[in-house]
Length: 175
Image (tube, rainbow, N blue to C red; front, side, top):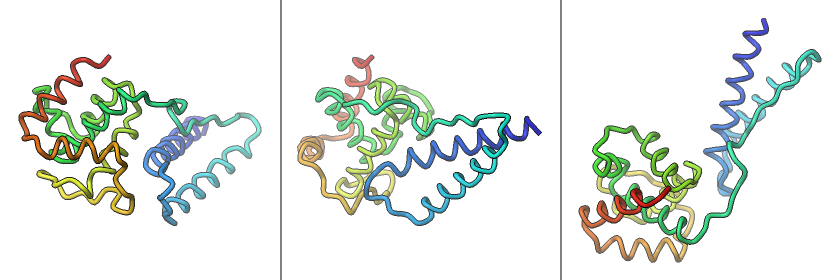
């Protein structure tokens, strides 16, 4: 029974993390996400009714940190590239076969950012960028911020090779 409890606790914790990763934006108002979150809380309440063991789970991997201007600029450029060319541009730069999650993880790791930050930046670009390998809708309800528009204006005029070289340089200098 203890092993089953640990499995359930891990599943619940993983679900809370996924909910947090995908619904941190203030614009998300999904009744489905709310219902899922409420059901997970009910499961935890049932498990916590056992006084022999306290349940600890983390919703966030790290504390929220402010992103400096240079890092934000680099992340915005990578996000633009991943919006326009999808994650394959990272594979082309690295000469690898990463899936989308691994590509975001790699780029976020090089910038020392949360992967969700980079995904959120990409989602900001999606409705405003002519995507060449996908047709994601992104955050179509939200206006493109001025600093993102500046990157878009600069990168819209560039071809694949130029953008690939710029992103490659960003990824090679980040630690």
